[in-house]
Length: 233
Image 1 (cartoon, rainbow, N blue to C red):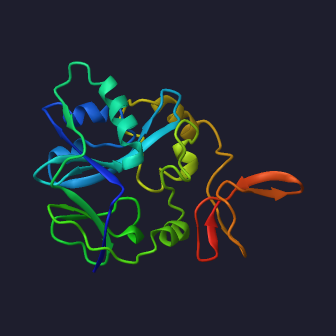
Image 2 (cartoon, one colour; image 1 turned 90 degrees about the vertical axis):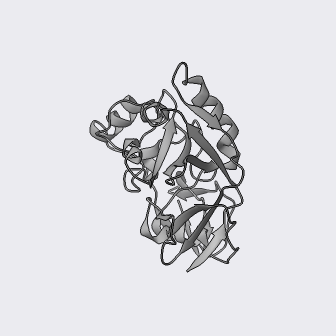
Image 3 (cartoon, one colour; image 1 turned 180 degrees about the horizontal axis):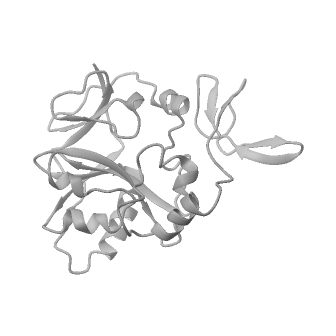
């Protein structure tokens, strides 16, 4: 078992009787099952126009209900969530102290959860003890299995989650009912054919993220995360 401390994540504790129903009406995945038992759900949070704003894990550790999100997105995401809170009985305590998130490969440790996106991503654990740094090449794993990441492939107010594999990666539930951006997402799923999507490409020399791929003098794609001679495009 190898693990790695996640130094760039922000953990937020949610309390209140309405915490899960509140999230259920906002995010792309079904989180109500977390009321019954400890578990983890990966989900997206969209604009009213159906564009990606953020993604995060909702976690019931058994002791607390947490939002686990990239630190770079936390301030804006929590501000947006609070805009919808109104009279709901839900409180958000940002940057929860005394709780650390670790991730690793191999056997899931006690109190940990398999990453719900893909088996190759191993596990995530939440405890009072920081993880031990390791040399896991997470980018190589993401490239191999076409798994996007925020602020790289996933760009707020630009990306559409179905073009970036959220259905394949268990990040959207088409049976859960309404949420912000649901109408656009459902229409893309049922009434249109996606014209864009991820592909894995090979390269001989690393290039800058965002470099265009050309075919017959026309741009047909862009290069994103690169590792081991391969890249997400």
